Length: 245
Image 1 (cartoon, helix red, strand yellow):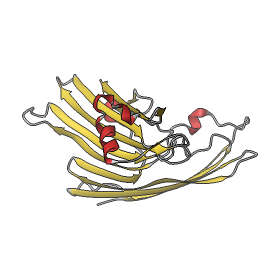
Image 2: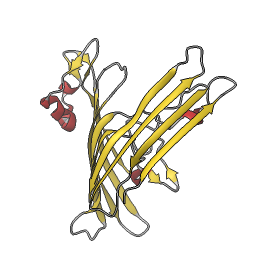
Image 3: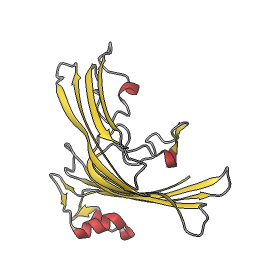
Image 4: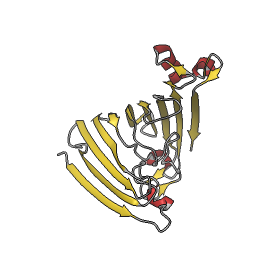
């Protein structure tokens, strides 16, 4: 059975100096104002149904905040609007969705995480949600390893919002990793995590979204200079990060 949830949060926070402490506003996905004011959040949705092989869930949330400053005003913020499907170890998320803390690679829900960004390289719990899709593979045993070696991965694309130097820039992620169990107390977790921030348009340059540029963003053969520049004007960046732990 799929459980439906509905939550409503109302909050007011005031500081003698007008600025709220960092710990009160951090890791709130950019929803709570940094100065004294009020905040409201409504969330609803469903979770996966473990009793079914093919599972589906959805979620939606909307926030509103008011900053008690001379130039303060009411802001209405779309937070989440997503749908997800799951079949065995495969899952697909589509829409605006908060990222999950990567406890599998960065810590445990009980002990917390050694990573200040929950295991993610490009954004943290302070970042707003952005539209996109993420195709995921949960850890599955590699054949002929008796379950001692597991493979997992993710393939995703997102589009940035709001006013930026490069308006409409895209984010691509390819991640794959292995979890190797050596003994009952010792295992090895290795991840190849590739992010690319590309595309978009500014006053000085633009990068069209074409099949060729998309291919370069995903593979970056020999760090092809075409992905970084248009003529002699830099306009984007591509980064590949390898982590092992």
